[in-house]
Image 1 (cartoon, rainbow over the protein chains, first blue to last red):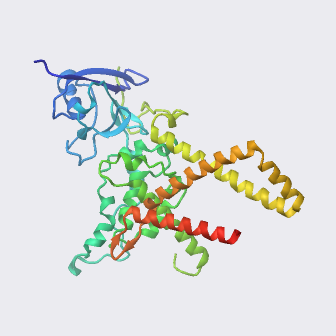
Image 2: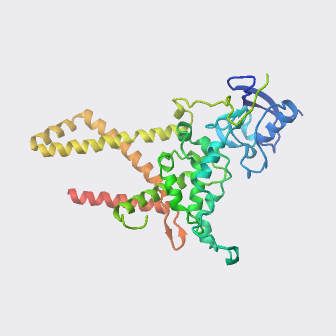
Length: 248
Length: 134
């Protein structure tokens, strides 16, 4: 019996030979346990070694293999090829980012924005290790745990039309990670982050399309994090107007 | 053909966002439709201002405005506006649990409970307004 195959159409961009991206199709086996990433690996190994894309863990942890699959931002290591029969499967680089080559996009903009929201525990005075660890109850952990599951796969940025239209927008993952640290009982950096994030290109650029949360493979819910942030920022502003002498 | 790769590669490809990007995905189209319902909210706000102005000008101006609002095209328009406003309000209420996190006894209230609270507040505000007007 002949093996089932499926066509994978890849959006290719080779800057040294073409000015605009073009489509290239490959016929690959469609095995029961294969993901889209397995199909790409098969192309790379057997058909065309020039195909470029990123991947690492193959188990939904590293966040490297995000691509547009049939128009949807997808982790290619978590999308079964057989679910996409009869094909063709259209694979494109993540939308919203400049394409370096084939399916590889440049994410330096995200990395800079992520650093700007201080995604680490900020303390006014750091305890010495001799003073012991910072204790946290299970309830305090539950407050931020959901937001800490982000793997920086950037599917949320590709699903966000605002990021595509206004590239200065800080974006869903960076804002969700800021919220992750704001809600951490050990952190004291919320006021510092608020100064950055309450600017127009921070939370207020978000118009709550909500697709970032829909495509998130880790159920982080960045849209929810941003709306919670908006409520906090608005309450902060009201407090500063009503109690100008109080602590902001 | 040799290519020199450097940090700011001059030949990165940047895809332009098409003007009709919101037709490419149902969720985007639904989002834009909801944004457009804000026009109905603005229309009603404007109507209230016009009504208050007519009230200030006296009974004749008030009667003229209401005679205009009772014409079939105005009634049809406002039936449509009411439908759009209901869509706007209901979708707004259903988005609210995303932003409002309420804790009771150390546990986060489920979205359904937050939503029910919003519906209860809406009903209470409507009844209060009805009481003031009657």
